[in-house]
Length: 259
Image (cartoon, rainbow, N blue to C red; front, top):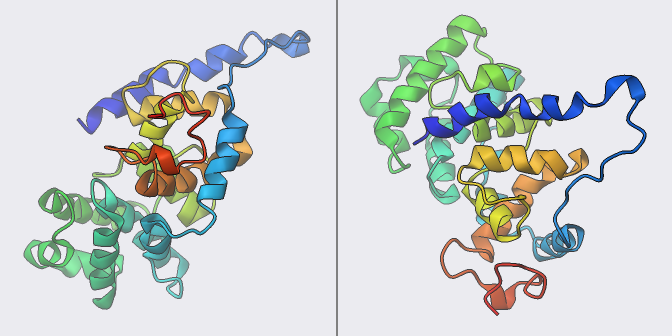
């Protein structure tokens, strides 16, 4: 299933361009009002309020906490990418612990290339799909060594071509490793909550669809914050099953609230 969103990403890439092409040489005085969700600013403000304590798993053990901030920049970036690869379908606590074990071995491109698969598997276990991830980590690390001088690529296009790296990881890597906001990182939490709040014009099936839908209306200065905000909100309140609507500040203006 990992490959489906990637196909749809290519198909949809032309959408925004087609949208802008009506804008012939400044002839666009009557601006069509852009679609935006009802009450979204108020909903966002209240989610910020609920996230004020920064005490969700993503805050304490998310990817931004998993790398060695005293390492050389390229090692730091490599560790960011690796923690993102480990994090897919894995709880933050488990990813964080695996990264700590890897870092105790001195986590660099060369140390991973020298490590045999069995050892790497033992260290990262029990992250989800750890056998596949051993394979992806080795393949990606070899590519980084050969093609990027041991660093990670600087573009989303190149990042998603690495084995085991999907769009969400690529946008987060751009943000955390390169301090560059090139898109919204949409994981299961962001995808679920965007649909519950009706932040998408019509229901979306895949995170990649949700990303395109959100980027179409959400002001760009909010793109960096939205992943972090919604992931923590999804871990603590807007849970996948049995969301805690009675504790949610948006219960009166959420289309999905169980009142």
